[in-house]
Length: 247
Ligand code: ADP
View 1 (cartoon, rainbow, N blue to C red):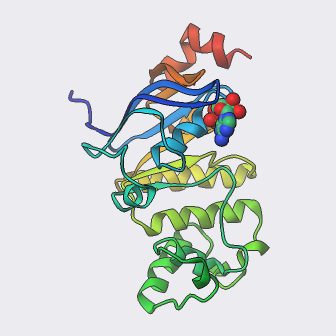
View 2 (cartoon, protein in one colour):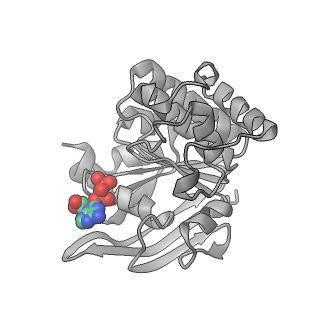
């Protein structure tokens, strides 16, 4: 059986902060069509890897290959334009804008002076409303984002990311800080989007969530990938248990 081709491949990725080797030769692949997990102890470099993949911060070295092309020299907006979407651990909605405006805003490049003065076209509003419907937040479309609970903000952020119709969606802690019912809904939405062809790379501390959802799973330790495999392989890997799952 042929392996699906990697949609994203990271090779020898490096980022040092002064003397701290936050990401230190990290290599892994995200096969097309998968929900791939990235796990590892706190401080092992997972969020920094995300930041390097979308160029929130610039890598010191290494290769990032997306859809068969090197993207490590491209600015963030160009990576997004090519189909790389991401959410952040701390949501980044514009509090003074409505839910609908936030989702529409996701597909625009703004100057700061335009913020809060968005003319939303009918076509954009329709697309945004469909996505809000999908994440279960349509009823909140005219509320200011700051009035939402943390979990609701995460759902709106997912709608925002989808507005750009990304091929690959990087999710930073989608199950973090939300209630068990919403965690289950989040997993269902990810599975449904995956069935529509979206590929995911997920950083998450909630181990039952990752083990039920992700395959393959890559384990990062001290800025490098120490193991990769199926959930069953990861759970029984002595090195992984020793470094991570055992504590
Ligand atoms: P994880 O997401 O696995 O918890 P991070 O990528 O957030 O790990 O952090 C990896 C290491 O890099 C940590 O020691 C963290 O303190 C450090 N680090 C992350 N971002 C910065 C930064 N902007 N400046 C300095 N150190 C950082």
